[in-house]
Amino acid sequence: MNDSSLWEEEASCVLEKAAEILGKDFSQKEVSVVLADDRKVQTLNHEFRHKDKPTNVLSFPSDEADELGDIILAHETIVREAEEKGISLLHHTLHLIVHGFLHLLGYAHEEENEALHMETVEIKILKTLNISNPYEDK
Image (cartoon, rainbow, N blue to C red; front, side):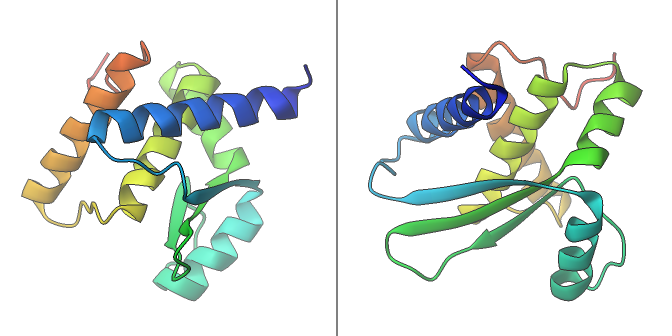
């Protein structure tokens, strides 16, 4: 199995687990997970969020009935963050896929109560995958 198919399998598994935990059936919906470079993510972040810097993950909901949307991951940012935090690159990436997925479902973290709710759901999903709480200080 090559690295690409392993990542696809991991991403698919985490999305299926997230849907299961949320009690939702998305089996007839498509989610695209794209690994992009920081420059591309910075361009998208500037164009759609008016923030001229890369960010680790962006989510773009779809208007199509059979699609939830796109999750765009910034490769260099994710690698750097995982190294700085001393955590597994795979676990950090899977966390960000969950985070992006929740955004596609309408979760937000602009307000403190929204952020706490979203973090609680993320932690619950990640725990089922044996991934540590990403919001807990080590």
